[in-house]
Length: 155
Image: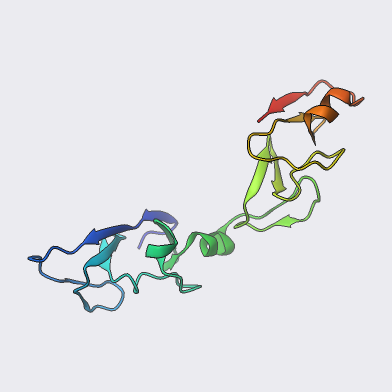
């Protein structure tokens, strides 16, 4: 197994005339109608699992991760090997597996990504502005009395 590798998982139909293949997980013959193909090997659907949480990787998504001879789902890979950081709004730790919002070099919890004056949360597609490294809604941006020339509109 390769260290630090992202690998795709494919569902492959077993052809009726095809000789059953061996499962890389249990070493048993795969006689099911479908099998998974990952890491250049074949697996029963129940045998390709995350080494930490035992979730079935054929169901979770089409990607798995390998490191240190472990086969992992994305969440556990990031939990074990991902980089954590701090939220630019609340300064609390953001776990590596958590979804985030980014604006320039800043990273935010989803709940913290809001106008820093009126606390209005943004929806997908809403305009927001960065002024003096603060996230602002359009109304507060247009009416703010903040000084500085580093204005940038984002969407």
